[in-house]
Each structure stands twice: as structure tokens, then as C-alpha cells.
Length: 472
Image 1 (cartoon, rainbow, N blue to C red):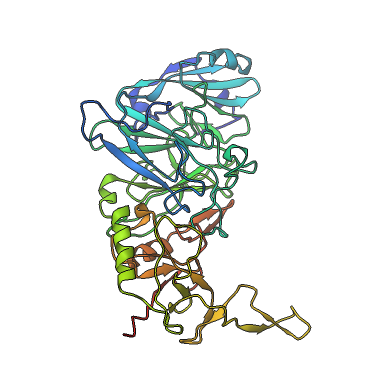
Image 2 (cartoon, rainbow, N blue to C red):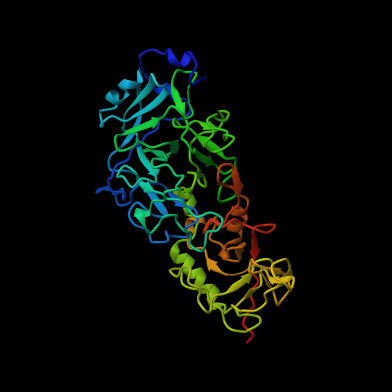
């Protein structure tokens, strides 16, 4: 490969037609989606083809202000009535002052690589009848199919909070998510393979990689590059449903190649090319956009997850068992799935270090020695309590049923909870997610609750719930 700024990078032929063999491991990136209907329903089809679903971690079923149009916590990708994919066609080497003229055709998709003040490479894309393209980003412009904004980090509360939601059009001034973050290309014929590429086409159907962006000329004379904060992908090491195990986080380039991570998120030096891995999405693949993480679920994988109706049935079964507070002996009940953030007086609470489930009580604060007060003692600043059943000290939080079925690994009974947030789901689900390190900041990784985004604590990150049955 030839790096930006070398003499070889500046002396290519004026233009070059790209042959299908140029993109070795996968088809070329399609993109640019439109404002077409997103239901993908064909008049002659009763059941439209579903490629898969994207679920944003940390929202537990819907955004804080509700799902509206393309701004939502979950989006299904369906086969479009008409293909809108694109693929590389011709590469041009031009002087930078001519770039604007070369890109003036708004009906032509293209990617511009600025190598220096006097030299740019422009790759023109042509229509691909075999693929559908879906674009993801922070922009609310019509070419973005899935509008994604920043998800709250380790301090996230119940249901997940979107930074900037509710004011200023929902945009966050400090957002690290790109306006045109990435694109997914789906093959229109079985097995409907989906592939991901960094960066998306803007309203002029262009992608610009400026002079400071990481970019390079490949060994076969083509161009490739990385976006500022990068698009990271982690494929599961095994089958996401049967044997959940985390894979290795990688970075995806503009052309869909796979690289080891950079030293920091926006470093100019790319990581090492990983030739034996691809940008093909699998059930359970995670996509991190530096501010929000998305989960890809296939139709086959979703068949193993509970529907909203099944989750409601599980909730009713829990309540029908009439769990009781072992101290107050009052009957506990999980609130309805529609109730978010408002704690009900009958809601079960748990001591997350031992798993004993109680009703709410306003006592049990453990006092610790410390410099906080003149007497040398002060209540634990974290609100930790002492469990009256086993005397273990730890956080005491309300329990919430995980409402986003697509985050479940099976439809098993809700017997476990994530620590310290108290989101309840199946044992397989808590064990699987507790093993997955999710990106945070420029180079940190933490396991987190998929329902609210709170960083997991404790030895395992989850606890088995111990309910007290009715005394009568």
C-alpha cells in the first residue's frame, strides 16, 4: 500500500475504469438512501423480505421522547421496491481546484480523497441493480434512513437517555457521531447478505475525505480511507444465540476493508489490515459509531427472542406468583412495560450484591467511616444499603423488566438482573452481555447493560434474583 504524501500516490494515471474484481472480498459499497417509504412493502408481496434489524443499545424499547419516523431505537431494513445500491465505476486523478467542478453532478455518487492541496482522487459510483443501500447517521436529511443520536454513557438511567433530545431539534452540539456515519448494503437475492461501510453519501451524493483524514492508495491502485472517529464492528466469536461469546473489535474502512483498531479513536495512522475477516454482518454483530452502539439482528436470530406480547406474558407470570417483601410482607408487582422511569409503590427492589428482592423501604443505610463529617462518619454517598436478610452491603435499586426483545439471547424466564441498574431478563441474556466490552471514549471498553447503557459492576455484572413467595 502507498501512504498519502508519497511520490507514488501523486503519479497515477489520469483516470481508470474499475473492474468488478477490484473489490476482492465483497461487493462494492452501495448507498445513499433516499426518502423512499421504509416499509418496503411490494404491492404484489404479502410478506416483504426483511434483511435484518438494527437496535440501538441503551433505550429499552423506545427513545426517551418516543420513536418518531426515522429517529427511533430500532429499525427494520426491508427489500426496497426498487434497488438503490451503487458500486465503484471510474477513478479520476484531478487537481484540487477542479474537484468542485468534477462533483457538480448531483445525480452521480462519488467519493473524493484529498491527497494534498494540489491533488485529489475522485471515485465515481454507478447504479447497482443487485443491492439496496441504507444510510445511518446523525443528520436528519432525507438520504439518512436511520437517524441516530448520542446515547448516555455509564450514568444512563432507566430506558436510556439521548443527549440533546427534546430541544434544538434533538441534535447535540458535542456529538461525536458523524452526520453521515456509515452505510449498509444488502444483496437483493438470497441469502440477502448485508455488508457495512464507513461514511455515508451527503445530500450531493458525495463523500469527502479531507486532507487530514486517514487515507491511502491500495496495492491495486484504488483508494481507501477511514472516517474521523471511525466505525467499529465486532462480530460474535460463535453463534450469537447458541454460544454467545464476544469477538474482537475492528475498524471498517470507507471501502469495507477490515483493520485493527487505531491507537486512539481519531489517530491518523490506521491499524493493520485484517485480511481474513470481512465486513459482512452476522446475527449479533455490533456497530459502534462513537457515541451510540447498534446491534444487528437477522430474521433467523430474532425468531429466538421474545416478542412484546411474550414479554408481557412473562411479566404477568411473575406477578401471578405474588412475590412478597420478606420484611414488610406486602405483595410486589412489576409495572407495565409502558411505564418507564416512574417507580411504582408495589415495584420490587433488589440488593444487587446478594439478589434478595424486597419492597421499597427507607432504612438500612450503612454508615461508613470517612472524612465527610466532623463526627468521622457519613452515610454512603452511593446510597448503599445493608440487606436485612444476609447483611451484605451494596446498591439497592428498583427492578425493571427489559422491554427490548431484540436484545434477548433467548425467550427464557426473567430470573436475573444486571448490576447495578436492575434490568431483568433471562440468565442467558445477562451472561452473554456481561462478557461483551463496549467502546467508550477514545480507547476505553466497558461491559454495559444493553437496556440502559449503565456500566456493569461486581464480579459477574449480574445477579440471580431471590424472591420470597407468599406466606399464605
